[in-house]
Image 1: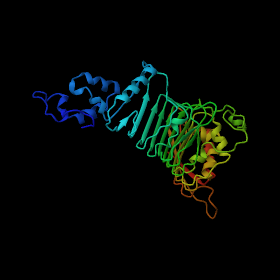
Image 2: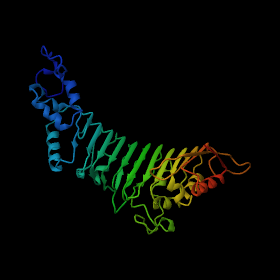
Image 3: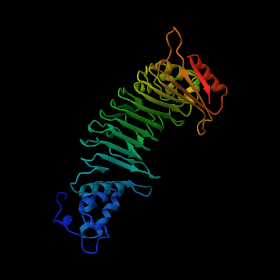
Image 4: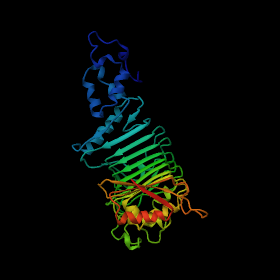
Length: 380
């Protein structure tokens, strides 16, 4: 029985004839069930009967759910009163609380983004944080005060923090978010093993060193600041988001320790072109996927550069078909090491897959390039 409860109602036998109602369960079970309800619905159960008047205070979960009809000020006031009136029972799943392990704040629908207060999040117990439909500024994403945090998922939010920091974070997913127009967010998460950056807008974040990275999937879309119609000109210093004279990598250096990497772009992007000028060594990379633009739109530079800088690569997949379509052909190849010469690429390369709609001039250019690296193909 949670602290502060009066009497022994939770241990009373159910009344005769009540065997078909939810009242047959002890308080602890009901509190667990209430934890799966939206917070407003859980609070409303207090009018059901005397026994239910304070069960919601000790629910093991706390779910704050907003929609397009909600007034953000009223929602904030409700949450404030909710937290003030909660009991002392520990939370397993919640949207707030110092002992919570999983913290979710998800605002979906057409409602305006919810502005989170610029305060540090501090919790010795928090292991997973999920945010959706919120506006996040500097302090909240400084997660050094959460030493057990391992998983961070952010979806459909505005991220105006100069840095996302966590020493303990292992899984990071940021999708359909808007970063700042005026600066690049730095991501400092040296313990990451999995990274997903997908369909985000404006200035792409700078990835700092991630020595433990295993899987990474990066997709840059057309509404990113880093897409550029002049990308073929060869001069990236004039591109929006570029710092003239700054040759530091934005993306590839932070990904250089990954074992499995997928890089895709939906249109011309200056990030990869700039980063390839200082292409790092992908010392652990075993599988690599590149899409149509990154294979062909950079004059084959991406394929050439990464192949030459991936000494243990085992599998290369090239998706050479436009967005929204599907491949009709798979061309498979394998590496045949040259005799008595130093290999230009990984001797471990066992499989090369080229997926396309048809072998046109563009695909032929890629196949011809790969053949110069002693890769031999068969058609299926």
